[in-house]
Length: 302
Image (cartoon, rainbow, N blue to C red):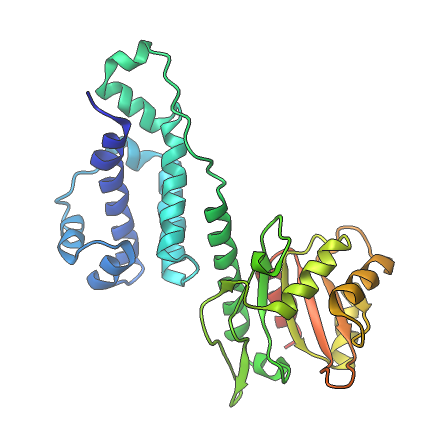
C-alpha cells in the first residue's frame, strides 16, 4: 500500500528541492543562503549540487513544475516571496497535480489497483486565503522596491510619511490591507522602510483606499505622496483627478467625492488629493489596480 503523500515526499519534493537549489545557485546564492531559503541543511544542498539526489524525469520535464521553480526562485532571490509564500505556491501545485494529474498518475503507477477504482482526490482550495494574503504582501514588496530604488523619491514623502498599500480582493476593513508599519520616512534624502509589510498597519492610507473602492473604484493598490499643485497638474495629464475635503471625516469625504466624480471607465489609475486643513497636511493619493502599478505612476513623476 502506497499513499499519494508518499509519492509527494519520495519523488516530488526531492526533485523540486533539487531544482530550486540549482536555480538559486545559478542566481548567485551561496550554499548557506540556499539552505536558509529552502529551510534545509547545507549538507542537503551539497547533495543536490553534486547530483546525489535522484530526480524524477517526468516531474523535471513538467512545464508547470519548471515554471514554479523559476517563479519561486526569482521571488526568493528578489525578496518578493517569503519562505511561507514559497511554501504555499509549492503546496498549491502539489494539490493540483494530485487531482487526476501528474502525481495521481505516478500514484496509480505505484498502486495499479487504483486505476480501476473510483477514487476522489479532492483537496483544499488552491486559491486559499493564505495564498492570497502572501501574494498581496509580495505585491507590496515589489511596489516598495520600485520606489525605494528610484532616485528622488524621498523628496515626495510628506511630513507624516508615505506608504505603499494593497488590499485583498474582498477587503472590508483596514485589517484586509497590507502596508508598511510606521510608514516610509525621508532620512537624509533616502526613503527608509521601517519594516516588512503587514496587514492592518496603515489606517489612513487604507481608509482612503477602502473608501474609494466602496464608491466604485476597482483599485487595490495605493501610494501617498506630498501635495504640490504642479505635481497634481502633471498627474492630471494622464489620470483622473478627484479632490476631497480634508475637514470632513476621511471615509465619508473620499467616498462622496469619488461617487460624484465623472470618472472614465477602465482608468488605469485614480488620483485623490486634499489641500489640507487645520492640523491636517495636504496629501496626494495615487490609486491603481496593484501596489506596483501605483508605485510606477509615482515613479514617473521623478
